[in-house]
Length: 403
Image (cartoon, rainbow, N blue to C red):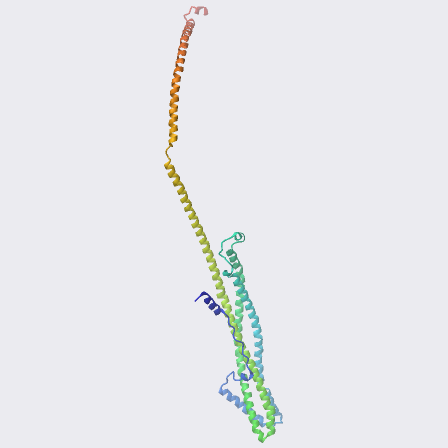
């Protein structure tokens, strides 16, 4: 089964189907809707036969005959008033129910609007990459969850209103059950009076036909007064029975509508809100997965960059190391210049030594002459020094004069 077919099936399952409108009940079809037992019918017919016998026994011009005709006119009045009171209460119930249904419908509309506004699939690309505006106004997913948090109170209020409406509907259904039981009892009493009226109609017509030969005047009075009012009352009873049956069926319709509304509230409170929470949970999980995926991607990119940089550095350093290893000895030109400088230095030293020999010879000759000259001066200076030392001694002839 495709996804679209499954979705369509789910929608059909959640669709609330209202019951068909209450069919109109014709008065002539109202009789017999509430069954009577054979024993009940027999007793009712015995009462009718006794009444007709008593009526015919009266003088048609006497007050007693008029009283019997008045009884026919008032036949079933109590039962009709009782059934009418149920119908009046019924008329008020749908109006109050519609007001309550309107509140529930408004709450369902608000819940649907809120759900559609919070539907993650309808909020654009929540998992799109962050742009420049996201850095200023925040990411879409963060804004969405902030919106959901702010709407939770509103959703809670709607669900509370729906729950209260559901409780009211359930109480209405309980009251409707009580009302329908009472209406059923009233319809039973009306059915008995309709059977009495119908039997009275038949018996009066038969009795009038019977009296046509023996007492035409009484036969005429029976037709004009008793039979006329009996048939009139039969129509009134059938009409009231039709109205009561209509009300009974309408209450059943209201009850079914309430049941469907309760189902709708339960679905909205569980399925709809549960689906929203599931969608939000999935969106949040996907967001966390996206964040982890982005971190993993960033980490893999960083690792790849590190490996790439290391390989490039290794490549460059290895090349330079091998190049340096290949050119680690002193270049021949440098060695040649070094040896040439040594040779030049040694040649300069040799040249200096040759030139220094003549200079040194001249210096030595000059120094020898000077030394020779200084010998005489040194001798004289030494002799004077010795003489001075002799004159200053204790045995000197000058010592007495000095004393």
